[in-house]
Image (cartoon, rainbow over all chains, first blue to last red):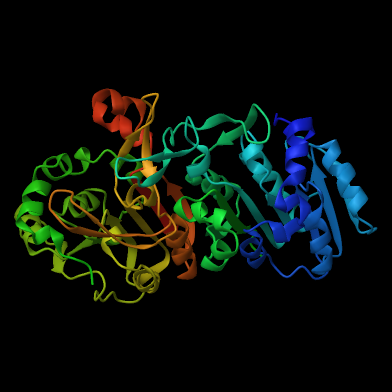
Length: 244
Length: 244
């Protein structure tokens, strides 16, 4: 079962300060790329797995979705989402993604932002998503890139010439990784990109786009700390479709 | 246009000593994985893009292929392939992969081993392959993994604790990389894995498998130098299909 780190007080407080928490999707530099992978949402049924404060749920409604469900494991996140939302066609539901029930043939879009790297395995969820999607429906999600997650110790190294490198090791050794991002002992799961893509294919979905996200030069100019995201991908954005 | 490094005397001599040159496919540790991605070859028309000594061409015939064409840019490699081959249903043809002509709807399998990272771009070739495949036909290929190819200086770094990491940088900066493997000035092209996968999808092919190859424990026991391939992928193996 996935850890509920978002209800850890230190993590929750730290997360609340991030640009993506304060400014919503405009504070997430990968949002433009992820948005470009979405289907037309007019009149569509949407679910957001790991909805956090509900930013995407509200934007999906602005983009024309008829009804949106936000799922999250964190009571605190959902309480804040409810405070920020005034829309009868958005509902929030507390669940972990492993015991989640999804009705068959009920959804046009399954969306998830930066949640799936908390799950020990994805085959079960992808099979559930495939059944829940209507024909032609989409799964669009982001997660941490395995280049970012894999190493025994995540970080940069410098060689004798002063050149900076992101350290990669244990890439083939899938499983738990513990990081200390915002709080001590945050548990994530490393999988090769191939494992994730093959899990989607194995669930009967067709891959539509794989974006190992990096910043544009304009984004780096506006937000210089993003330069390191051009050196190694931190995120991967993936779109897959169910056949018509 | 791709560099013809295989006709460089130093490179050719060095390449001739590699296990995969001396022992053929059994000397290539990724062969079992790549083989498992192939369709049934009985009675099928096959082409090998970058056939080298023709090892795969001969094995494809043993696996039942009715006719096999081996393409290579290197005169020396093709001369050696011809020496090793005694089969009227295998033909070798000298061409670079960029000016190669492929007849429409003529092939059941397009295969390529460790050649495509020498090409400046893949969109043109993948479009050509898609047209050349019969409905239900397959493209199965290996190439250097972008984690291996991307950095300004390819190699391992050690941190203060003695832990070893493969250095990754410039991942988002696609283009030429010069290495000194077997000879000075070997030109390869770095592309993100997403770029390669999206090029296949863009050409109208469906992704069937993505294998960021790593050795089995048995392979490491038998050939200890392979242990580093478990720390970071050097190769990626990809299978794509044309719709029926």
